[in-house]
Length: 65
Image (cartoon, rainbow, N blue to C red; front, side, top):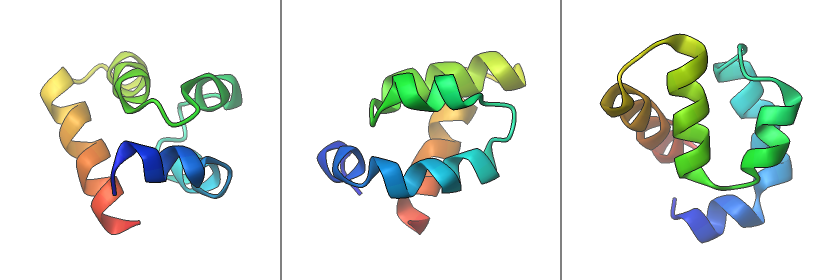
């Protein structure tokens, strides 16, 4: 799923994102608003993981949606 598609379906995806990454706040998700780079950064920050791992998780999530 490309970033344009993600932005278009953000409202529907935000609930699934919250389920997958429960440490993200609603504000984090609202501010991300389809911006995968921001989302990756927040996942990295909240979970204390490497950027590459956060990017992989977002890619895997995008593929499964």
